[in-house]
Length: 187
Image: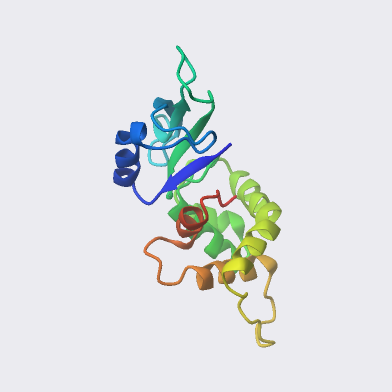
């Protein structure tokens, strides 16, 4: 599945307004794209309310249209796919958990209504994605140098340090910057 990731909701809405002038990322035809609904998920501020996390776009092949019939989604960089937390909250959690080693305590600081097992699932997703994240970041800049004075430099700490180095000076937090720059989801 292809996805387009935008810096802000305003930027995404502008893209959606100009769909008929945009070529399909699959078949490259112009004039065939239509809005096709929304991807909904729970809002991080209100657990009983579902909010729109992304918009679906359809390349129409109906009624003799020349499109391919495939869809893609338009996301905002601050949303993380298949995760209740925003990119900012995820960044806060990962930094705290890597720094003090206590995932539950780091997660409690977010005041999230997710279950007690959620921080461990999120951490496992980071561990599973680390090799692809580091490989991708290595194409952008070399990893941070690790000196011998830091006794417990874990792989997660190294990954987060590499992320900070790659996206220093970017207007967004490193996870949102990763998603926006690389047009790929973080975990």
